[in-house]
Structures are given as C-alpha cells and as structure tokens.
Image 1 (cartoon, helix red, strand yellow):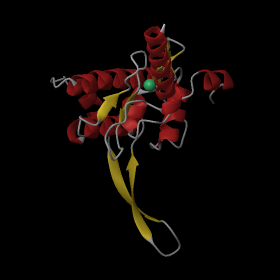
Image 2 (tube, protein in one colour):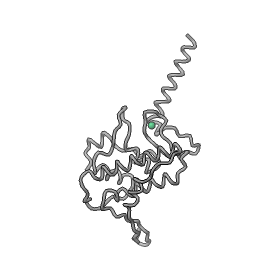
Image 3 (cartoon, rainbow, N blue to C red):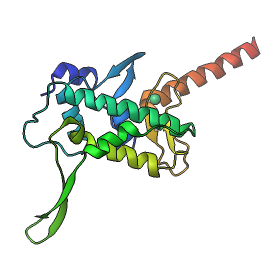
Image 4 (cartoon, rainbow, N blue to C red):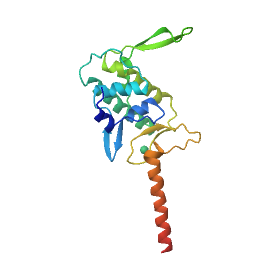
Length: 201
Ligand SMILES: [Zn+2]
C-alpha cells in the first residue's frame, strides 16, 4: 500500500485530459523542486488504477522496484518523444516499441448486466513491461493521432505539466488556473499597477 507520507507529499494529479500526458505529469514541480510521485512499485500500481488502466488482480511476481524502474523508463522516453514531436522533430520510438511488443491482450465475452453481454479486453500482466504496455499504447496513440497544436506545455516556465487543450477556443495556457493561471494574473496585475504608479509619479 501507499504510505500516507508519499501520498501527501507527491500525489499524482489528473489534469491533462489525456492519460499518457497525465503519466508524464507524475513528475511535477512542487515549490521549485522536481518531485516524482512514483517512488515505489505500489505507487505505480496505484497510479495505474487511478488512471483507469488495468492492474494485475493477483500479487505481481516481478523483482522489487522493477515496475518502478520500468515505469520511469517508459515515462522519460515518452517525454522525449512528446517534446520532440511538439518541436516538429523525429524521435526514436524504439524504447516505447519495446513496451508495445511486451503487451499481449485477448478478448473475453462477459455478462455486463443480467441481460447484456460485452467484450472485455484482458491484458497479460506477468512482467513489468507488460503491465505498462497499455500505458505505452496510450502514449503511442497520442503521438500518432493527436493534433500537436493542441498538445501543450503549461506556459509557466517553472511548471513541467503537459496537457491536451480541449477548450472550444483552443486557448488554454495553464495546467490549471489554481496552480499557475492565478499566479500569472496576479503578477500581471501588479506589473500594470507598478507601471501606472511610475507613470503618475
Ligand atoms: Zn502549470
């Protein structure tokens, strides 16, 4: 289980509007420090669960910390690919592809209610990389299909959050108003006031 300490200190935030970008955002800036919300295998499992990805139903039989290492490696190689794609450059998808290759799934027909059936996709989850394969798939789909005009990094220079701008006007600038937008509004207001007072003095 997650220790409450880790939980309080660096809880993952879901504000990107895209699961792969939320995954990147598990590394965040808190009071000028870069903080990693993923500090243990349990943190990775908790994040997967919270993000709606499949998690192994039984205890996983992987070496301690291998899931954490695997998650961080996928996350940082995805970050490079997203940054390069945003800059209009070609990144090397080899690492991401290794995770995709580790992913195996099959369909199962299951009862969803007493009278209706549905198809569930079940992932094989016996290695760290295969547990992360659905996240790699989300990242691959983002890189292949998203309109990168709308994939943005928060305009606050110290903020490292990415998001998908799903506003109608396509003018979202901040990860969130509370975290970054308000601070800039206050700063801009102060600047205007300063300029006004110099003007009148
Ligand atoms: Zn921000």
